[in-house]
Length: 345
Image (cartoon, rainbow, N blue to C red):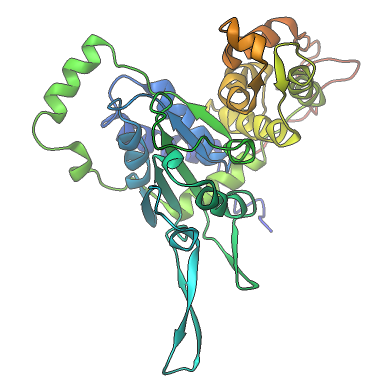
């Protein structure tokens, strides 16, 4: 159990995150919001799905984030002939010991990069389900714990359909957030030509944070306070997706949990010990949109899941502003935060 003295302070969190952020932004030009979302998912103990067209730096972002942290990293190139045992591992008969010996697969790392995840068969994709949700792997009746921190960063190309297998709903629901890198601005692309024109910046990228520091920061994020009003706001947003006429599948309770965890991480990155409705609003599209399935009529009308979430954000009432002094809160009859001095996380 983590004690008061074991937790990192907001000052510690900010210092470590700024080092990692600066390291990643040195590779990914002109995309600070994408880098921030990646760090939010890492500190919220989630997994990240990077979806965009070829050549915009999806794999580069995943590699830069992984190399900026001094931890074990494995990269899996998903292909149609990839087997589930290549990911989870396999038990092999040892002639000398006269017993089966478990050979860990690529999933046994602290940061796992899954490149073009939708190129693997559904059977292989399903090998990730247990590890991403329960952070463990079960082989031949034995359960093996995965290291901490544990982050899966997967990439896929949404426009290339030949030779791909769409991720099932259960697989997409395991990812805390989906992000699109997008094309860089003209200025950022010019800087990229200067930086990437010779040697790849990944070759000189050195770790700027240790794995044990990330674990402490994750513990700090868990201690971020969330008022009843903010919790209710997150539940209202997710509940609205289940009754929207343009959606045939709304967000799951896991989506509510992921939205709350991401909001806590976002608050900590902003130097706050409490989450605001602004944190929930800023992350709603990234956390919810990839889990939703539009109806056939909505697809004909070119209505996207992102547009539906934006509409829900506009229609859902936001908790009222604080009415009493303190270090933050939203009033729904009683103060949302305890009236006491701010504490260390």
